[in-house]
Image (tube, rainbow, N blue to C red):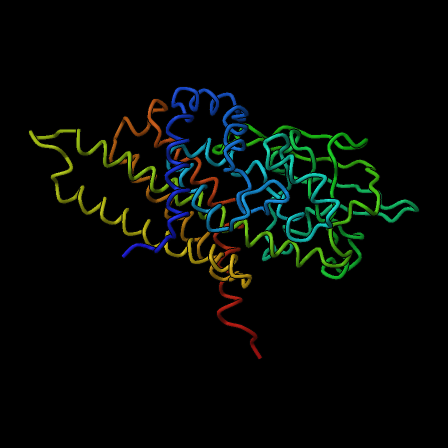
Length: 383
């Protein structure tokens, strides 16, 4: 039995599949991966068709749909091409801070441009379950007469150096409890004191701009505060959980794409006078790959639906991210193995799928942090 999707959701899947088939060129993908180039033209075309920010309300330029529809798009994109798909879906990363917690003026000032493919948004991935790593990367906001002055460095900012704005958590300093004073702020592109160091030469997701962000006495006004001043920790936890669903969808698409390519290969490749798809050992490997993918598909869709029901299940989101990312790595690794020397060559897709899968396993909460998050919620309070 398949997860029951509505007719409109099935139509979205087909539309995205057709778009990706026509726009995602293999030769171009390999070249952009090699040179770390963002797929600008494809991103703008995807935005024109409403595939970027489909979960954003229509009055802000979005599709007025939900997290599940966004999940379906992410899965379909990455099934066709892992690196292009991830870059497109992370083009509006962190815009959810404004969508969920921002004021009307903040939303109207930025979200329509993001959804229309005119502006990237950015932030760093933070793991709220790993307090030392999370707070250690938090810039300090010093109170001034006209707002705050920001100082600090943030590693691995998604869309760093290319985004029109960044959503950043800030604390009052090392000697204060961060959970009681953390605030989320908007840092616009081009402000004096903001600089970047390129971090694009990474293992995977090489079309997604990544940079170290340096804040050297950056002045921002009170209008750049997102929501309330002492609610930053809750905001980060909420958006982090929603990002787990997105990463799960990206990983799910990668896993399915790697399986698709494995199936195509084993049906053509011959050894000892017959197709290797006829060997039981090959069939069992494919069966295990397909089983793991279906398991995480149900989990990912269920987590997405919980956010659409306005009762987000953080535990489900963490489970989906943990399971989907590990499955993507395992399935892509098996695809490389099944294809032998061809799987190891850049001429074929699966080596790139494997690199992207491994990157997704590490960002937005590594397996240790995710297990901590899940355990915290299933064990509850210990007296």
